[in-house]
Structures are given as C-alpha cells and as structure tokens.
Image 1 (tube, rainbow, N blue to C red):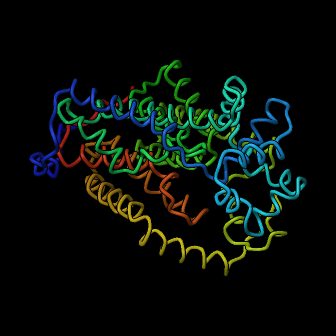
Image 2 (image 1 turned 180 degrees about the vertical axis):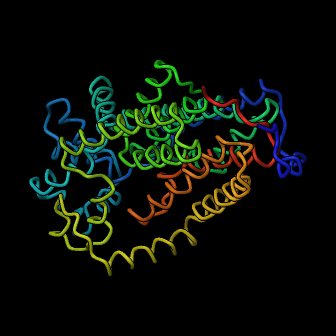
Image 3 (image 1 turned 120 degrees about the vertical axis):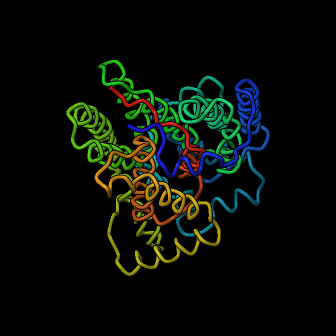
Length: 395
C-alpha cells in the first residue's frame, strides 16, 4: 500500500493550526473541564427530562409520573412549566397517567441512560442533577477520547484540531441537555477509538462488541451506523475471513441488545418515530403506533430538508464533506486498485450512509443526533487534506 495517494500529495501543504502535543492535550482537557462545568452552570431543561426522570424513579421502584411533574414544576419558571404542559400531546401526558405510561416505552428504549440516571439520582437525591452530571461528564470524556482517536489519525502537531472540531461541530451544547445524547456520543467516540485500534484477537474483538452493545443500549439508532459500518467494511475488504468474523460478532452483539430492548419495551426504535413526527392528533400519539402515512411522510421529508438548510446547515455541510471524502478516497477503486487510506474511506462511507438512513427514518437534522458524526468528519477531513499517511491495517 502506498504511503500517500497522488491526490494526498497535492494536498500535503494544506494548512492546519499547529501546536505541540502537550499544548493540544492541555487545551482539550481545559475544554472538557469547562464543558463539564457548563452542564451545571447553564443546564438547558427540556421536556424529555420529565419522562427520563419518571423512568429513573420507576427504575428505583418509586412512583414516576406525578413525582416527575411535581419536581419539574418546582425546578423551572412558571412560563417554562406552562410550555411543558401545552399542546395536545404534552397536556395529555401531564393529566392522564395511563396515557403517560402508554407512551413511556418510546423513552424507555435507552436503558443504559435510565439506569445511570436512576443510580446516580438515587445517591444524589435528584434525577435532574444526575442528568446534568451524566451529560457533562459524558461530553468531557467524549472530548478526551476523541483526542486519543485523533492521535491515531493525525500528526502529533495537528491535534489542536480536536478542540476546534468540538466547537465548530456544535458539540459543547449537548453537555447542557437532559437527554441521553451526550452519553451516546461519548460511546460513539469510544467505539471510534477502539475500532481504530482494533486487532483481530479475541480480547480486542470482545471490547469492540461490548462498546457497541453499550452504545445501542444508550440510543437504539447506534444500530444503524454499526450495521452499515460492518457492511461497508466487509465489502471493501472483499469479504476477508477476519473481517467477516469481526463484523458478524459486532452485528450479533448490537442486534441482540436492540432485540432485547424491543422485547422489554415494545419500542422498535426509529420506526415508531413516524408516530411522533407525522401525526398531530393526541389520540394518534398513543404508543405503540407505527402507522406509515405516505403523504405526511413526504411532507415531513420536505420540511426536514428545509429545516436542515435554514436551521441546521451543519447537517448539509457534513453530508457534502463526507461525499467529497468518499469520492476522493474511493477513486482507486474505479481503477481496480486498493484505496490508499482504507480506514478513512470506510468511516466516511459508513457515516454518509448512516446520515441518510437516519434522516429517512426521522427527517430531523437536530445537531444533538449528529455531533459525533460532525466531530469525526472534521477529523477525517483534516487527515485527508494534509495527506496523513494511512493507518496500519488491523490484523
């Protein structure tokens, strides 16, 4: 395998900010610490916190519905609480305990997050404090983990791109949210690191599968990326035996967790989101309801694209950057040659397909779903533009 493609040689002069390894690490640690603090100083209380608080209480064997609403009412300003109980869905969720319980499976599909909140909240005496702690710590760890992943992708003097990527990729906001997104992104970064360091030995394979399973247990949509990554890697590795074994173990582990969550909660993951995006009648929102409405679906796709262009351009920019990476790195395949940077091509292609699949299942470009993709894309883009040498292949 050549150390650098012809295209990469032409781009080797592309400028990236330089700093010593120690300075880049220090700035990344400082950003992680500031992010952790922001989770407590400027928490962004969102409506989903009600359901996760209720589930955390039920995890501990306590009453969930009334207690979660009472604690939320004591926590936020009256106008915010009014917004949390306005509209047909939210109003009925507050007033009708049976309806609230019927819809909880939609949120219960994140058992790892709920268990973390339940355990920490029980010790701290506040599930909302626990949510701040988990989001803040997860984001801080994600920044640190991404630094070590970038260390494998980029020269030591180019790692200042890591804190820059988190700022540009809108990753800092997730620390302030009362949602499982920060924990999921932390596991996504850990999955990236372990995947980049992987070998085909049983211990390394078991670690990769364990991280994948934890990621799916935190957010079911992780299954999309894991399955697509395995498919892309298997095809580009031309169905090599070692790759087939690793990808089969990965898919089996991730799928087993997904099916266990489905069986325990009745939630089929992304499929039930049709219910929340396309239906605007309170009775139609009762869970489960995965009825597919073609006209409403097309309308949601159009609106989702409009929303992405006008409100979340980073989603479009990420997709375009991934397209460029796939076209750039995949050129040797058209000539029957081996790609010079195999791992970057696999990751870029998998993320591009996963972005498309996620949007097709849930036409919303909200950044909290895609921060992990944004940060990783920036790192891969930087690697390709400076013409970094390829990684050593696993094996």
